[in-house]
Image 1 (cartoon, one colour):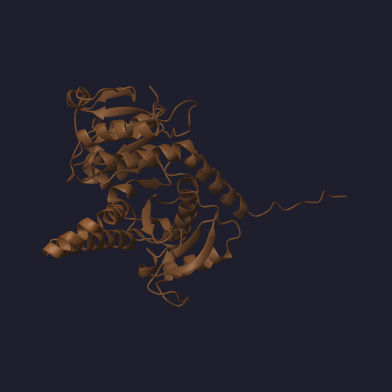
Image 2 (tube, rainbow, N blue to C red; image 1 turned 180 degrees about the horizontal axis):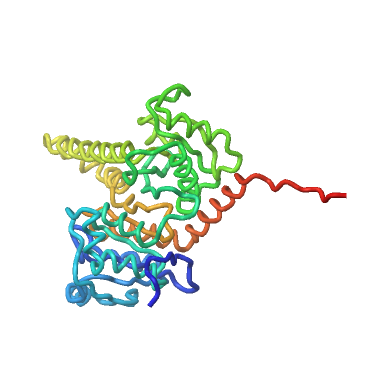
Length: 363
């Protein structure tokens, strides 16, 4: 049998095949199975390998009219718990739905894995099985951010608490390629999240990373300098680079602010009869606003830098949100994203090598 720890993310000819951890997340397997059905309408050529408790998966499927999008169901005896430590999950979760879904990609039976399960466990397992790409020291979690100009990508969102300048430079390269492949940017603008826009602001890591990015001639994007926190949603940069500690805090703070705003809006329109009438008159506009700010629309974070495509869905999302995470996985497979990243880092590594010195033959 093939060694499942070997990387195997090279695209196969034919339809995209996505392995789904059917037991990961708060609403599994319903959200996963129904999410696959929703995604199949947007990607009719895609096929899915559902990994998990076969009886529970079949119970959900039995209530659906069609299942042509299901390529296979693989039974998994165990599930990684939300509170399991990554080390524990890695050691004892070899027969879990999460691990077997990852293994399906490593074995070449699928081209991407999507899970809404334990983030730490998913990162540990994916890193152990897929390994990091040559030229990349650490994988990073990348996801979308809504902005005034459309969407941006931010990384890292929690995989690496402490980062050096080289890590941030690598994140900038991977984020630029992600922005090109998934968001369609021709020349992504890249900024480093900082406490100010001045060159002297920030710690040594961000200042050194900025110096290196300014000096790069082959960055797959355009470095524009530092980005402050309030400039992220303004769209000051297409790619926002930061360490995992700061990125995760920024992400959670933004999500909390959005929920607070929604709650205040709801309370306002229930405060009086005139407020309710005003809501009814502007209901169409508010429905558009709700759709634009729906967090499910931005669901689906990728672990960049691994020899295998792994997408993390929010654990508490519903079927529609999980379908958006599948959208990300399908797009990355279609664009051969990992091959592009691998080729880019091979090119950058070759550019750093000193040119061979010619030796004249003795006369």
